Amino acid sequence: MPNIAVIGAGVNGVASAIKILEHYVNDGKTPIKVTIISEDFTPNTTGDGSAGLWGPYLLGGTSQAKVYKWSKSMHQFLEKIWLSEDAGEAGVCLLPCIRLSTSTVDTVEDFWRDIVYGAVDLSKEQLAAYNKGRSVKFTSGLSFVTYTSEPIKLLPYLMKRFTRNGGVVVRKRITDLDAFVADSEYDVIVNCSGLGSKTLLNDDQMYAVRGQVSRVRANWIFSAVLDESDDGNYIIPNVVLGGTHQERDYNTKVCQNDRRMIVDGCQRYIPGLEHTECLFDWVGLRPGRTQLRLEAERRGRKLLIHNYGHGGSGVTLCWGCADDVLNILLAAKNGSKL
Ligand SMILES: Cc1cc2nc3c(=O)[nH]c(=O)nc-3n(C[C@H](O)[C@H](O)[C@H](O)COP(=O)(O)OP(=O)(O)OC[C@H]3O[C@@H](n4cnc5c(N)ncnc54)[C@H](O)[C@@H]3O)c2cc1C
Ligand SMILES: O=C(O)C(=O)CO
Image (tube, rainbow, N blue to C red; front, side):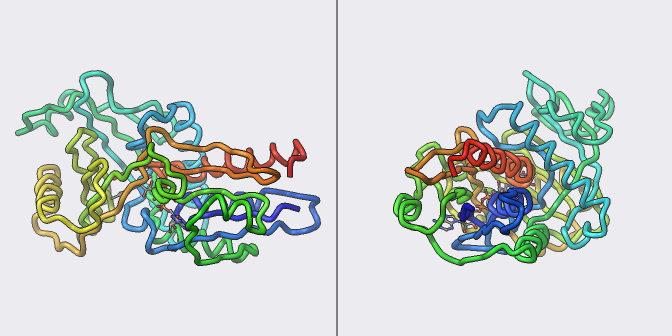
């Protein structure tokens, strides 16, 4: 019966660990052993400062078909939690959302419009309202209803589910992945180290996408607005004002110029934000990559599964990517390679 380790306790590591623990049935008798090994845990992972809005974002060249599959699985998972008694604890909220685009090539990235509820294109008049005073005009907008699942609540909820089902947790930094795979007691290692994979694997396709946000007290805002253009701002209950996405910028300190851009930019959409109290500013380094890496490699008789590079969509994709981590594991088992 395989002994499985998941490196990383961000949304992707925890989702993958839960999927395996709950769905990898060995002989049906002996419970499987799954261990999350991580240097940091919530509230110190990349997702913890984000609003956790559902929506594919900053995914490089990752195939749309895969993003559709993975993000749909997460939307269905959030719907299940929303309709359960756990929504409050898990930080899941259903809210209206408007996404705006200045692209002259295509409309809002809406290959996923049938996943969300009630997607409708904004009319010319509605777009005009958002274009008032703008030099670069929005060319399209999509209005729909979707979920937020704030990792600062989702992660503790999922970690509790993991440990309650017998999952093991070890706080440790892996410095040499090859040695860890070769010498550790684990038969399967799932690498969900996010940006950590850049050093762990010397992966030069990985790069930080710096994100700074400001969190304000505005309990009268119940809907999200996102400007998808390059220096686009967003307002996401409750309430995160965004937001920068500076590629290859590893500065984790709050920058006052960025703060100005964020606050002034968001006030253009909702002028009432001028009267809100700023609670704190936060910076996170998104695990950017030319494309998300979800694949396996054999290391002798062991299996190493990679699941990292989720850019600005780790919360949106984590449950669907965990499905494929499990599928890889089951295929290896059925091929009796484990
Ligand atoms: C400002 C901002 C806003 C965002 N908003 C959203 C949003 O609304 N919706 C959305 O879907 N996404 C959003 N994101 C993106 C999302 O936060 C990330 O894609 C996601 O958190 C990545 O999760 P992960 O588990 O892959 O990596 P991480 O959360 O980075 O976790 C990696 C884990 O691996 C561990 N680790 C790394 N290296 C090692 C090592 N060598 N040894 C042991 N452990 C190691 C770390 O300690 C950590 O626990 C946002 C990001 C930012 C910065
Ligand atoms: O800032 C990000 O990465 C987002 O996904 C905002 O929704």
